[in-house]
Length: 234
Image 1 (cartoon, rainbow, N blue to C red):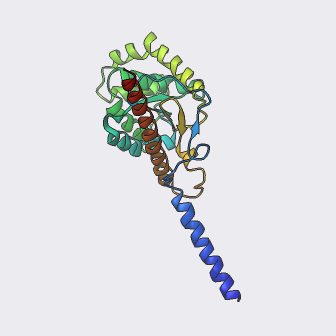
Image 2 (image 1 turned 180 degrees about the vertical axis):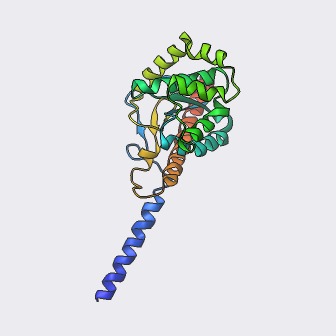
Image 3 (image 1 turned 45 degrees about the horizontal axis):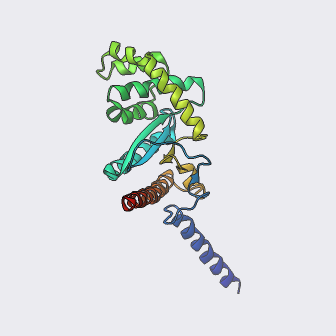
């Protein structure tokens, strides 16, 4: 009898492990568990396409770890989505990296250098988080130093940094990386992977991307239905 109970317990634990593992890729994401609905939807300007906004921080190890999978996911979406990034600032010391991102964006260099910056910080152990260390890094990337500085210190970049703070507040961002979908939904590895304690971070990332797939399909279908209604009225 005791052996039967031990065997039954082992089977139960095995089933629990399967259940936890399966939750790593939610096929039917739920509000409040795998994603959240913003209390107040935010305006977007992506038209018929679904807008995805990543809130991130260059010094965040989880952002660095997520970046390759997220980049691959964005590429796979093709022209179904418009992908945007917003560097956050939980403290004033984050601002130089915000200015770095927006300056690179103005120069058309984010696609080329974002992954390299994550690599430099989190693998090579470089400091790239002050005006001085940022300029030293940029100088090694073959970018015109004076042109970079002119943009970095410009009113336009200051305006974008203020706008980033407004977006961070509007979306109630309290951790990164966090993904917003069409100004209405929020998800992240921390949210989608909350029930996966002890599982590899890559599984939490995979769960997040599956939630994004679900939300993109949902929003795209709603946009298409709305367009059909407008067409029929005409």
